[in-house]
View (cartoon, rainbow, N blue to C red):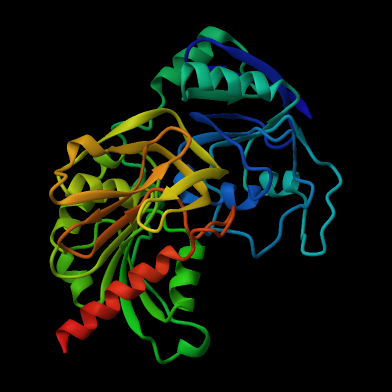
Length: 370
């Protein structure tokens, strides 16, 4: 254990200890209200460029394992909790969370009032921060933090997208006999999205975020999926322009960043939330079926419904905490998008049924082609 400091860009300082590697890390500091699911959070590519603060006071009690990962590596820039568990216990565990963070060279900081930090972020908004175990000079930290990249006007998608396309086959009774072929744009796709699409009978062809329209159409897909991912949606205009080429040609479904990109592609605009939605307990109302789901969320940006043409696009889901847009649907074309994570991991699976809507739209598309 070694001394550590968290310096925020507004000059606020928190002193604690680091349990893992020595060094420095910078990122946008956000808080997550989930009580569990920390391994999925750590490996969610949507957290690239961010330092995550867990509001639940004790993290790590069930260790980590080889199954609960949402990508091939840890993406957070730093991880903060009131206290990290020293003695984990779970039959699936292969190592402790502390060891996992150490092995992945992630600074884990504890030993200070994370409730005070969370309250500060709620009042002042998410902001850049720096954790250091080697430099405690405030002026030096301020200078280094100022020079670090921000989440705005930075293409974080290129840091997490796959360098080349790959194939994820249908599973279960559909193995070798898929019902549909999906072209998926990888902006930082979570593994459980692929698992669910495969379980529902889809062969998924995953493409890098900068893949061309013609490359994706060459696999003769029945639908286009746009994944979650990190950062500001306006920083990836090349994805938006590619997505627009699919309108009227294929069913399109987007999640999280994919939802925001679709909002832009449909002529709308986005804005940054004060401190974002990060957690596994956000209530969302499905305005079509009049049902409420508790959802998993991880985003800092939101589509501005007023910027969209109401004659073409309708809001189909709304956040019951702050009334922000959680889902969109085009009135003419089979285009849908959801701001939250219906695939969960972590979080409740209340909204997993939404994937069936994408399946249904591809079924109609195939029927119309015959």
